[in-house]
Image 1 (cartoon, rainbow, N blue to C red):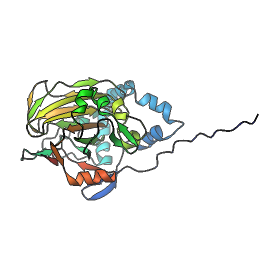
Image 2: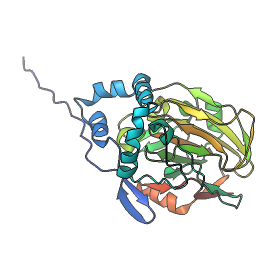
Image 3: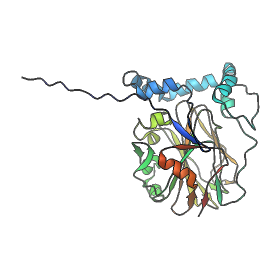
Image 4: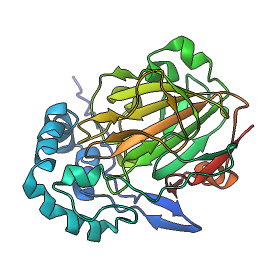
Length: 304
């Protein structure tokens, strides 16, 4: 009997850099613990067992405990210097790394024009229009379903043909989100899940990652943009998503909505069809496959 040898294809290791668009220039994203990230999500031998541990809440809880300790404060100056964190409008002294991570800024400015949408948070933005609820793009060769993301098929149908704004917050960003318009906010719906990284190095490797991660879903009935759904997606080392509002509360533009505790994270915004006209510059970079750096309050589009 002839025995045929079967060759198994190995997944390629992650070698490419993550490139982002920043004010007319393309630059490499500096990723904290990048070597470990590439090992976990790109190495076919060591990666899977490490990923099994990292995605679990226990690891994030242990990291969170360290970040709340007094000893973690020693890491703050080095972190600011290494990753060139913009501390404008922030305090200079923090009792631990968790306080520094959830720092507040007192210099945020949102557009005076009520029809202009200022970004609710700082991070890396990309925008997709004419979305199909059953096939939304998360990254190259990676898609997900809106009904699964929302945990509500009927609600997902309402956003077919609309717009998705994706805001990825890296560990170096300001990790507070603000309301982008006046309106009324609903009660958040919490969906349990894992804590995979939301960096492109991971999103392209884990199928339906956004739908598999821990997340909070809520609606803001705004004055200028209709009913907008926001999805806050937790990620590796994000211990908590803390909301600063009550269900049914009337909120104002620029008011704090929530903040994340240590780690990277993601905010997804969904607009109904014919309610939002995105910035052409951001659309052009998204079409090329690049995320664009954005500051909290910086314009990303207009209401229709």
